[in-house]
View 1 (cartoon, rainbow, N blue to C red):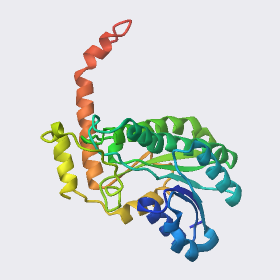
View 2 (view 1 turned 90 degrees about the horizontal axis):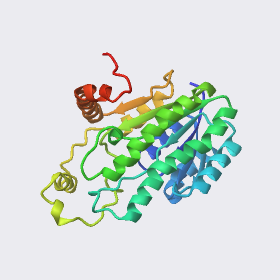
View 3 (view 1 turned 180 degrees about the horizontal axis):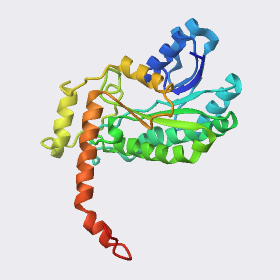
View 4 (view 1 turned 45 degrees about the horizontal axis):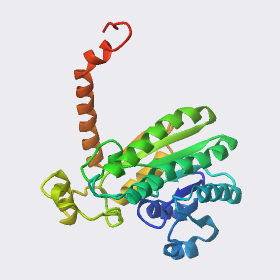
Length: 280
């Protein structure tokens, strides 16, 4: 297997940390970004120059461009860019604050978009590469209490679907990874605004109690999901979506089936609004 160089955001914990360690152990190079670089002292000592690190807050667009440009300048070719960093804002749409909404969108959506935009000129210049966008089950399926998180994940999936078509002629391929509930620290990192009592006996309250009581199903193995993301880079052509976990497959499949049935039910209305009545 040829040695590759990877650019990964959010390498201090979760999937980013797991992928980074797996890649370094097998001999690859990783350019990693994090907001808590002190958590990476051990791998930095162990792997030396094969682990390139820089501080990055995804809400700082200028810093994103600097980090990506510096990584390509210092390491030369980067084969794979992994947009991994992000977090979840947990609460009903009424409960979250304006500042929390802004930070969620700036980090998960705009930050991910800007990482890709910063990388594209370099990937074009080197003749291609792979971009792996970490989304989630929540990129195609929606739970109550995660409306703003879903807005960012559904948004980045639409962006990737479009930009993948734009840059395909340059040999740049995209995969959207959709991990389900797993053993990372995602739940611990969620931002939770003060609750509104009016939602206590609604689906919002049901989901909140499931999380607080640790009864929300967590079938996924984070290490296996991280390895599947790494392995997907060897698949050609790149799969546009990579569902990870039985929960992702089951929930997304059900959602797509329901959406298709709803679409078919509205076919007559859809066709009736054309200038000229279309024939079936």
